Image 1 (spheres, rainbow over the protein chains, first blue to last red):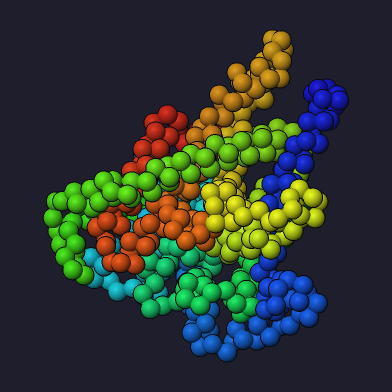
Image 2 (cartoon, rainbow over the protein chains, first blue to last red):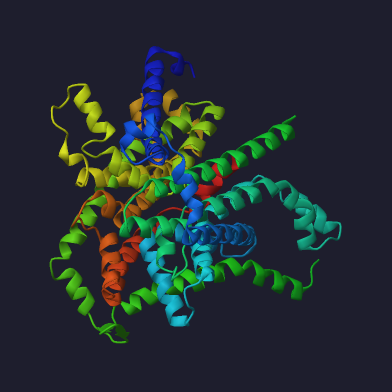
Length: 268
Length: 289
């Protein structure tokens, strides 16, 4: 371990930090223009010297958009409830069914399929089934997309749990569900909260898959997309993007600060 | 012990997520393949076994779209690996657990923020009057704004890389952080220098992660529909936005045929990954840490 203290290790460490931070800057840079352009129409300099919050007021004046906001919230709520449940069951299936590789492959599959192909495929299915595009079809596609992530979070959470405790509960006469609820669930609850938060965030930020099964229903994301394609970008649209970025950041930090405090209080 | 009926019920319940994915994803993907052989009649599609859609995709000018998509996918994958691997290695081997956690969190956030929004932003950042051109002019690197920053292969590469590099860092980090350090120390003790140790021990052991990163980078950018549309400029076609424009003219069998090509590429890569590596051990090792 002395190697890391010598000159070479020192230089390597600095070069790597600079590279990591450079890539992070490139990843965060695109979050800056929307808040700036939401402040006004006349270019960056004008938006910053004469900022106006009028665009944020406009958001509430358009019935189509207000409906889209409600739709997005409803879909996110449903996705946030259904996905973690499916993810917990899938994580248990990896442990208990005799086909763990199949369970893994199936549950992770949505991760590997580009958005258009996934949206198109489900649109074909709904059309053949005679299921008209609705909030339900939007929910199904969003759950599919969020499932692999929620599943990975649950796998991580449940792997740190020692199953010997479950066996103890079974020996003491409790059935498997009781054992899960009373013994395992309390210790993996942060994982469930994480899976739910992640699922909602992913659903809030999903465009491409939803576009193909939305029918006449809009979510905030499809509203942004269709307005961009028909009218172009405007301060109102940028304001909407800013709100979305803020909501996403709030959810992420809210979850991390909660799970962080819990981890720390557990450690002490 | 639980009664058999209870166990059956439990197994059925555990099968729910699998049934969900099978019905709403595996079946639809199969349906896509089937519809790609159907025929378009006016505004409707009719069951058939025709290679017409494939002929018009692979036979005509559209084959250039496929070639370009393959090239762009390969470029994003290679550049993405070169960008992501050092970061993943650094975070797995050389940083404190706390720094690693913070850095990984920071890489998660941009991925979570809608990538359509991020792509809109790039179309401003890379534009003639955007900050990157202003900066280049201010430092004297160029006199006139660079035109090729936006609506070009370069812009598409930037858009795709910033979308998929975070995706690539995570599997790489998972694989690298799962490597048993004693193997690396043994290599040092046997006299191998760090470079030799890296190429003979660390890199081979991280291959499951490298392969997963290749899948994310390649399949993602190969089938992406938004970035080429926003950043490629008018007429810039990759297979993903070609699919959406084909849908706009209601040619479903052709869209299905193009989507089938994307799905086939994905299946080949994911199939190889599952044959070559046991994903359980790959996930399991990292999970036990």
